[in-house]
Length: 303
Image 1 (cartoon, rainbow, N blue to C red):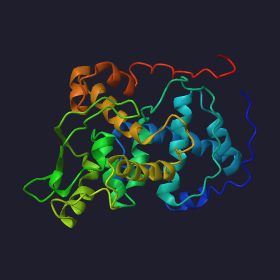
Image 2 (image 1 turned 90 degrees about the horizontal axis):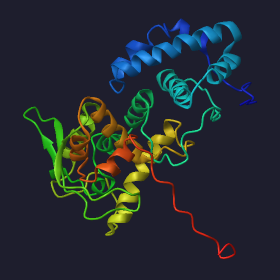
Image 3 (image 1 turned 180 degrees about the vertical axis):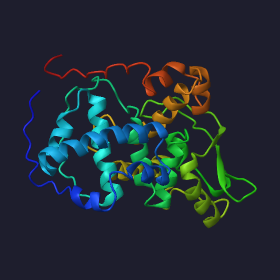
């Protein structure tokens, strides 16, 4: 569909990047950051090469506009937006505004979708700016359920012989929550490698019985959970994903589950690492099956 947006205000100082040795060094910088997978770096470089060609032939504003309009699928557009945000993080470039083209709409009943590889690396990268947020995103990126987040204490963190946080002891959840997740069982999980420094810092800063991701004083688990998830939402906003109605904090956890499944594990193993025994719920959350359509409530007039 046709889209008409004004990109005249885009400040994309590509010439300065070239003087600094970029974009030739983008792949090296991404690898040094440590939050992007090798496949995400490879995909980033493909898109960076295209962006460079477009800017060389049409200038910064028109090049960025053409780069976004060059998306052929909805997922492709997600990657292109994430690449621009990645370049912004790497070099302090201003690439706003980035309108949502929505060339191909996702399924109406897609909720809490999984992220693309580039989006996943970008979210992790944005989380590094704050240790607590890095731990929140890192916990979700390690399969921790939303109901378990605010209950994590320093004693929940497993420390290895080098003093590094490498795992979490999870207490599970006692009920289905309003987001649709089934009860999660107690278990242990490895901490995502990129988030280990944040958990190491928090675990050594707090006493064993102190909560490490929630700093308030509410006695209500739901309030604590909401407050912790707000930290994840802040990171998603920093990554430029808050305008996507299909992205939620639990998308980070779903992406972890899908990556685990795609690495050669079956659905039973994937459900187990997420703490669930409801295979169909897990299949929906990691994008193997569509969610059931939301139930519509009839109006009094219609009734």
